Image 1 (cartoon, one colour):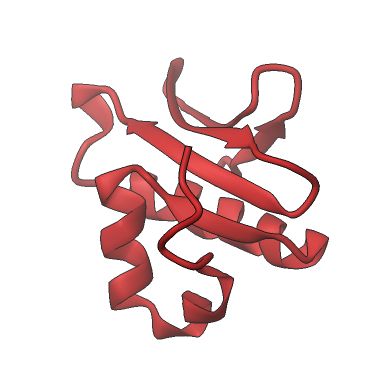
Image 2: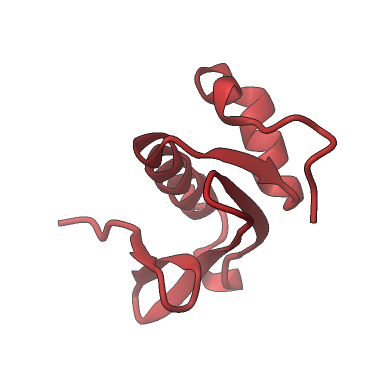
Length: 98
């Protein structure tokens, strides 16, 4: 069975552990309806395995379930949003940044 990303609300990040190594997507809550995705980290040993995409999809799906908008401060998340138009409605107006 393949590992699934988990939301760690205490640390404000989504985590995916594979082969004992953790990849993560960090976020900051800004107000009640806005999430700022600040950083994605994937260990070298896990790169090229679609790990960052899995984390990002999980985080965006979670934002949608909560009815929140997102600010893709992380360049990976910004690129993911541009490539996956199904999530375009989640992007907050460009003026709303940290």
